[in-house]
Image (tube, rainbow, N blue to C red; front, side, top):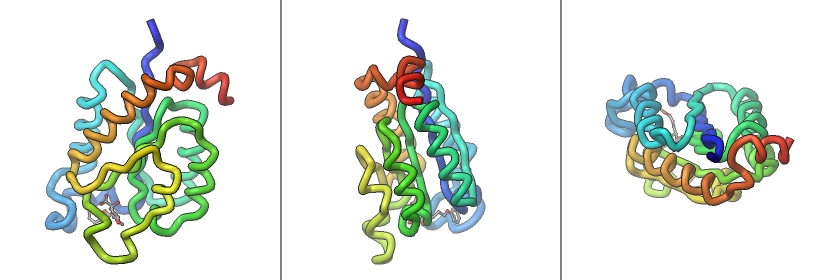
Length: 161
Ligand code: CA2
């Protein structure tokens, strides 16, 4: 029986305010609701490690951790997606699938949101579906993890260490 893949779901700055501020843009569901959606989407098929930080260095530490501990990464980089070359450099060290995820559709918003550094290395991008973007991103990540068996479970972790 293959080991259960681990999916890291990492969230960047201000997403802790989800459901509390700007509901007209980001909706009324909280980040805890989003976490529950991710866990339900994974079901018994994967283990979800769900985290949020307002600090660029901490996000980068977690990306580095995902390199050895995860089978796939779902990332909502929030504002850092548009600004952080350091985050891009960290993501470039990963060999696991990366699914970029946004609640809103940044391409339909202000010009400065139209591009992210993360998209340069993402396997795919899900945006514009509100919390459901995460659900879809986790489903994609689980499939990608399963279709890259060398990247699932402990064998992957030791080969990448
Ligand atoms: O649509 C997304 O998920 C974004 O990643 C959200 C970022 C934004 O900078 C990106 O362009 C698109 C902003 C996250 C801020 O989250 C808040 C949530 C509630 C209230 C205020 C901010």
